[in-house]
Structures are given as C-alpha cells and as structure tokens.
Length: 126
Picture 1 (cartoon, rainbow, N blue to C red):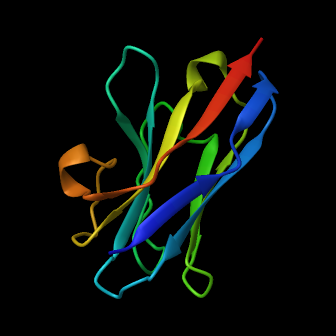
Picture 2: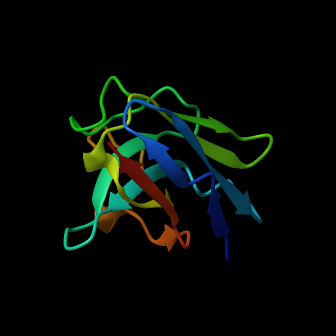
C-alpha cells in the first residue's frame, strides 16, 4: 500500500508564497493520477489541482487557477504544489491524494481518490 506524506505547510501573510510537497513511498505504476485537496474548518474537502502521470494534464479549481501550480517528479516519487499570492481564504488543511484511475480532465473529485496523506496545515493571515 502506497503511503503519502505531506510537508511544507505553515503560517504566512497574505500575498506570500508557500510550497507544499508530498512524498510517496512504495510507488507503483498503477497510480497514475495525483492531486491536492484542501479542507477549511466547517467546509467540505475541495479538490484544487490534479496532475496526470506524465504531467501533461493539470486541471485546477477556479479558486486557485493562476496562483497555484502542481508538479510532480516521478523519479523522486514527489508531488508539489507551489502556492503564490496566498489569500486568507486559502487557509485550510491541505491533503495529497493518489488515484489508480485517471487521467481526469476536471478538478479533482473526492470519489476518484482512495489514497490519502495525513495533511499539512496552511494558515494565511492578513
């Protein structure tokens, strides 16, 4: 079973940047699609960015499009999320997820993912 571990969260001021990372252990070729989700207190978990195995398909949620960039390094079994121009509304727990299906051409959906990391907290203050 693949395990995912996120890192890179923290507290920043609005307008600043953060880079999240997710490391996958025991990578298997069956896992084609990976994604970042986030969940703010009292809200549902939201899929914000996905990426296909070859990195060519990267759908984003409208809420982060143009500010966040998802990328992956298959040689290092890592997934990243570069977050620029952070806003208070970006405050949430951020989760890395993996899917044996895909690729998907819409922002990530909870039902498509069955492997999850434990999350890393991002807090943005103004």
